View 1: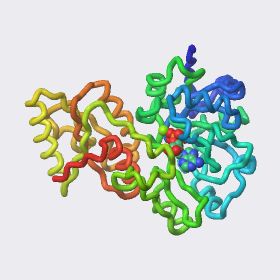
View 2: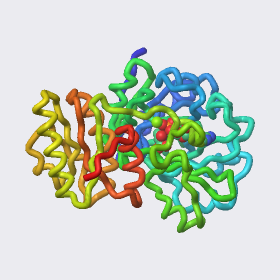
View 3: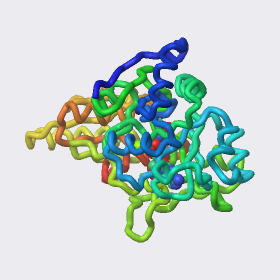
Amino acid sequence: MNTKIIKIKQENIEDLLIEEAAKVLKNGGLVALPTETVYGLGADALNVEAAAKIYAAKGRPSDNPLIVHIADEKKLEDLVSHVPDKARQVMKAFWPGPLTIIFKKKDKVPYGTTGGLDTVAIRMPSHPVAKRLIEVSGVSIAAPSANTSGHPSPTTADHVIHDLSGKIDLIIDSGLVGIGIESTILDVTEDIPVILRPGSITKEMLEEVIGIVNIDPAIMGNGLDENTAPKAPGMKYKHYAPKGDLSLVTGKTIADVVEVINKLAIEQLNKGFQVGIISTDETKNLYPYGIVRSIGSRQDEMSVARGLYGILRDFDEDEVDVIYSESFDQDNLGQAIMNRLLKAAGHHMIHC
Ligand code: TXA
Ligand code: MG
């Protein structure tokens, strides 16, 4: 298949280009589109054949449900059987934005979109291009992250091209995304809502609006023990691991961490291994050895989230054998950042 790539600037959206993408969606095709979190691989959520194409293109297990993207709350009536009060409150506070909510689904939503579940995940993205495409097409867009299953989520169109070129109809290139890690997933089908995946809408932010919120215990710590399957099916799959052996290093002070990483780097280099270091803007110049990249600035957690998946992909290109990464505090956005980094590291943490 020939994959067409079109550039659409979010500050100057060309209607003709949006219409071209809308047509592909209406005809049951696949369009990779920017969202504020990561790029998504979109298809008509109510067209079971179109949804099936997503699974084929990504190599995604068929029991892993898709998130349905809408641009108007009125669409909810079509898709879900009940909207609890707490859902209305968080929608009011955080939609459009990086919050996915799990509802009981209506019959109209095919099991081919929900991975066989009676619930459906819905999100209203704030990215202007995503919004316009949903509005113009009139389609509720099922869209997982636009990566090959097992790869990091794409934060640029180049990442999408790398993974899916030749497998999908169209890619919309709108440059680097704003957030860089996937949406927070909140299950409101129980009395006390549960976070199934941490994201940039944090537990603290949700609790300010709806009171107590739990976090699915299966995604905490090193998670995946056999007795507690995560409630978001996607969280149970072995997550992306970089080709190089990644360890996170944590210590009382950043200076301690830098010192230990430098010591480890020398040891590995002396053994003949290629070393990669995930530093920050503040520490980048303190590492004399190995290939050193900055994930972002400690002064700006958002920049760290935005840099995360790209840096992992870059180190794969560099073909380093081992990677040492600085760690981050697990409060606020740090919880989502560390959730993704720990998974990539197979929960390998060095304390110093
Ligand atoms: O930010 C995002 O959410 C991005 C952009 C494209 O919107 N999408 C995304 O989709 O991250 P994906 O497919 O990579 O991750 C969706 C996650 C999976 O872990 C899946 O298991 C979970 O959402 N999920 C979807 N529907 C669910 C449901 N009904 N119940 C529980 N978990 C669900
Ligand atoms: Mg994904």
